Image (cartoon, protein in one colour):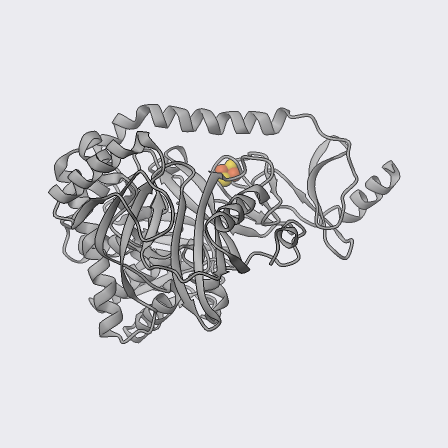
Length: 521
Ligand code: FES
């Protein structure tokens, strides 16, 4: 596929993981139910938690708003690694050596656990050991890489400093972790989902949780009016939608990043790679029915912020062409990640005074191991009462207070976006070409308009249903994205990503606005 085809949106984005596996068809919840543990969210965290708990004899139910494993899990680069950029020197200096040790042990154990499960269940998920590299092409990162090798080695990780990587890319320095891995996440997790059912658990798709009541037990209400009563609840819905406790909306920010599945002339030399410098670029290979793909990921921006999102795909295409003879780009996709204030996920009790409500979020782009860590920690907390890794991941950890500067920065950013959206002048430009989306002035109201290839205009109310920020058009993915906490909506107003639980107003005034627009011409 050429760059022009991307620009013209000849083919919509599609991830290789989604394209190469079947979609699921679990039932919708049609009656009120009672379970031991209700899990909100059917991504890798929800499925892995359910698998671990159901194996222990716990009666679990997963409530998934759409279909399972389609969100961030279906749009990842799928590296199973304890190497999360330059995390260990950071945790060591900002938190403690003890916390760094817990983080290292948790993630190394997660790699081994995925390997063990796919072996035991004979899951054909392209699992493969690979070394993982962080490399830099800039002098100022050389010492940081040396420090990370030192920190990781002291924590027992097999890490080394190298000056060359197997690629023909001139580098200044690199860090290499041994015994890391890669796989096909949906091939692995679709089988785990089947095991959940075999072990007595339930999975409900098209079942959006919209509220939780607390009256001894928890009662989750769904969009269709059904109730799930549970002694314990895990919120694994990516961005937590439940605002009564924890102020998660004020301590998570959202980023989007991009990936290409590229076919190239050269043979891939093996290994998984990421640059130390920002914006990062990452590489790994993946076998497919149609030959080897190289997955090139990277670029990032806050969701709903930044004008032309196609430029991120363009940057990845340019990087691919700089380093390979590109023959085709059959896949491209983007994803959304929850980022925490100190770069360590929030996994554990929702708050220190909610002993039966749990959360797993904020994986900061390292979701394959961290979601497996969430299954390890939460199943231990629920079944045994403690986990060896609970302190570093504790959502109420004291060290978050040390991130006050980040807290203020992120919340000023949200406030600015909220005000900017409300005050920005309404454009009087009604010329909307097929494939184009923009905010228009509909009698003094902000209206989001998108014209499809058949010429049909789709109009939405651009006020986010979460907390009222004004949505921005995302040209690369054809969606309305929220700059405050990252909710995303289709051009017909349906929710793609939370924390919003209600869709946008969509077709209430289509005819009126069509007329308004025509009259204005
Ligand atoms: Fe919070 Fe939109 S996601 S206001």
